[in-house]
Image 1: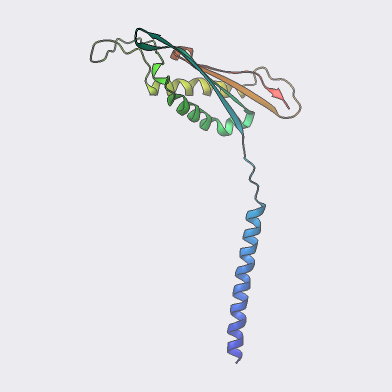
Image 2 (image 1 turned 45 degrees about the vertical axis):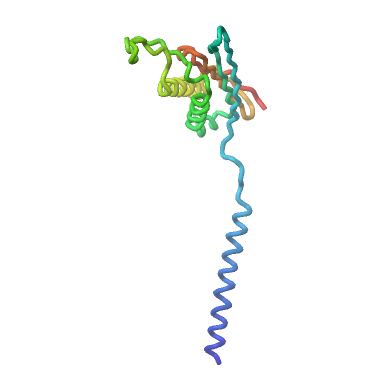
Length: 176
């Protein structure tokens, strides 16, 4: 009979120990913070024009403006994701195929006419270049002023119908 009691006590202890550890794990899971470690807000404004003439339509200029707002170190943490997200978004727009590039080399296609439009790789590299420069500018210390409390930085990027006109610049921060 004592072996039966010993086995029963061992089973009860094993079950209660496993229930206790399950309860502790469950309690910890409920108390974990779900706050994001960084936060950047991106808004987009796109405009374009079309000309319809003699049964054909033509793109008559376009631009897309992205405005990114966030705290200094949030740009550091999320910068790569912001750059890839904006590049992917812009490249999926119907106007991205109409971005012109000034070609300095005499390349041509099968018809012998030079292609005036930038490749997706060229557009992506230009977006990365100008946005990287603007994010780095937040950390340069240029225009540094004394502030109390967190400061939000704003970067505005405008991408138009010419690769040479792609630009991103810091718009000055504001305080909360």
